[in-house]
Image 1: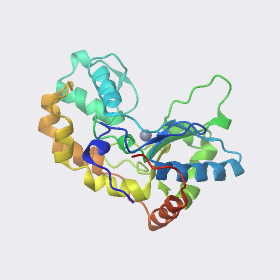
Image 2: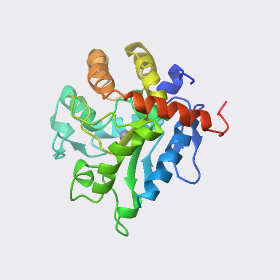
Image 3: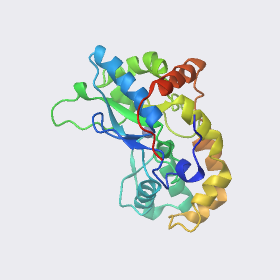
Image 4: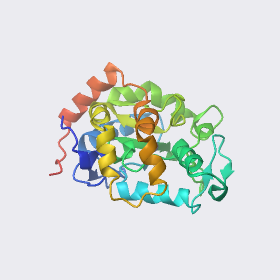
Length: 248
Ligand SMILES: [Zn+2]
């Protein structure tokens, strides 16, 4: 299985991904084939597994980051309550952004291997998913999906990297990762690769980020669940069966 380049790892190119016209979204072809298999299996259980976020570019992540830093998008604390960046230090703002959003270059969504999913069949007409844990817990709109995913995603090569609070990213029961590829991408995304991607970029709070980069890398990139052997093996098989044209 191919290993991603530094530019692919940090979302600065899209040469490693393809668009999925039917399921929607943009993914690495191996992850796309596996996702279509998982989606078909979910349909058997009357779950309409739909991606709400797939591949994301560096520029997109940068605009989210800068908007939050400057108060153009809501900035939230640990419990999801609104904060006012105008009365906070740069260190505090950077810490608050990182609770809910990745540093540009450090998002797993850059890899084309990671997908945020909902059960479209469980959405009421006009209802918008919020991607918050209560939706996936008992009594939530996506409670069935929240139970189904951990039981079945490994059969198609996926795992849930943000299963628990590990002191960095908050738990995300909606975030799937295609193990055979993301398990190679993670060690390739070093502090040096990240630092190079952030050079000559208009990043708000850049001085704080530069000073804390090694710590941010440890807490928000490395502190994730490890995929099990079943996900790695099943994902490789799905990749081999994939007849999709590879991006050049
Ligand atoms: Zn995600």
